[in-house]
Image (tube, rainbow, N blue to C red; front, side, top):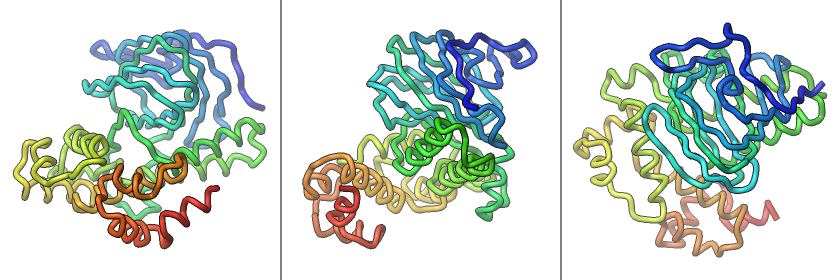
Length: 309
């Protein structure tokens, strides 16, 4: 049955320990005050746990978890401040906003606005299984992202939520399969890097996160190699080499992918014209935009939009 609770207090002391002022916890519920668990999958799914929370005011001490986790904002807009490994992000979160948190990352949360979130936590073992099934045989690191929009991840989360709210009628393997889908998507979309890449001229996760955040914040403008290299403090040649070593794709291909991801979201969720959307994602030529979109999706932007109406 669906596990529900009006409120949750910190668990037993053996569920957490403190090291250098940082709480290492099994679940965020152990450190977040004023947290109400709306439902939890508990141990029904192997390697994955989904929990929906209602949060009132929150301010935490630094903490980290063993499992990787992704947070989906569910409710009305709320101003949330999150700090991950010393990098602070403050923004008004709206439904669909995601946060990607590697298990080893040190994070702090603060917000005075009540809001609801869905947390999906994935074990190190589940992530390793997804990597093995994808043919990845070298160690990797998940890249923290304080803010992310990703329609495919959001759809998987809604499927997990629906399954939980129907008392897990599809059985334990269903949740695990969705958990593997989340892990595979993170690996496939450049949210993880091979540890060996850093030793062979790749990028540290924090630097890679900075340049990815810069790209996402400037998709409506021309993005030049010189500007991206400057974010990393590298020459253009070294930046291009290190970026491809870390992500598996050249910078220009990553930028195109992010432009198309943003465009697909706007086509589904807005009534802007295709021309306006092309301009909003940095494609000044409608013919170029149509060509890139057809190469990626196999259909025109207008046909893609029509399939969701």
